[in-house]
Image 1: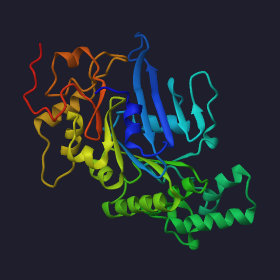
Image 2 (image 1 turned 30 degrees about the vertical axis):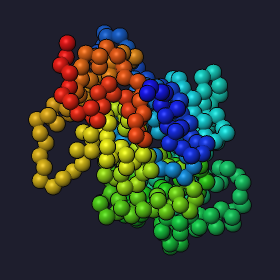
Image 3 (image 1 turned 90 degrees about the horizontal axis):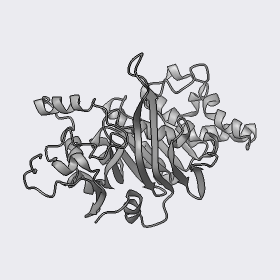
Image 4 (image 1 turned 120 degrees about the vertical axis):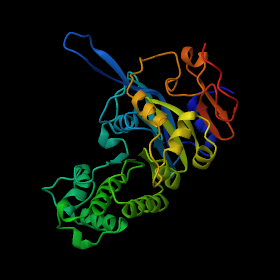
Length: 344
């Protein structure tokens, strides 16, 4: 059964979604040589996502697949070429309409490098209070109370108020970044590889903190990662991205236990295991990821790496289909366990 991605995503929700992104496209232009014409690099290609209030969506894929670009478009660091984004009853951006300023969107982001995203010349109180001061809705005493309350929420004590970022560990800095993000009471929090730069034990603390904040505040979270093990632990739903397109989405358990798209299966199989060496197939896959995809190409984005590809995969883009709680874009899903048809 064919359907659009936003229609399929809506079937997983039991209530009206908080976030609705439809057909978001973003291209970057540049020259590959001095006398060559400008070339288009399609970073996002018709991306559609829905998210309920209090839900955690894992956006997973290899480096360069468009995950961070999608996050930057949502918070206003990049401008989409086309598509719409709605958060609750508010239209964030749409073609021909004035986009909401980043400060008014109700979306905050936690970046991968906590030290790089904190001002080293500001102490903790100033860093956390800055967003509240800009809004101008609270008095100085109320701002100080909010700062202390949010430090406690992320597991830091009042003795941190006068310290500077260099005086904290990596995990503590990431807690500060989370506190700074949630102190303005956003409806959506985006965590872009927020735990990947931390030790494994500290990673788990940050993941559990995000789960706790979701339960306490009803936060909706988009967690961006390339690590399927982390995504499986944290997220309610998963969206798998490849070359700027969503190729599979569904409930976390359904996607991990019964992947339909060959790329999803490969991501799951690539989870680190002690003593395992990269195979020749994995080396070839890593190299083929570098090949550019022509914008608007009428073929499957995964065709160059897929062992199941057939002639139709080279001439048509597969539509999204839904089966058993997951949606995927593949002409030969993994449930069809027969040998792949030969190329014409």
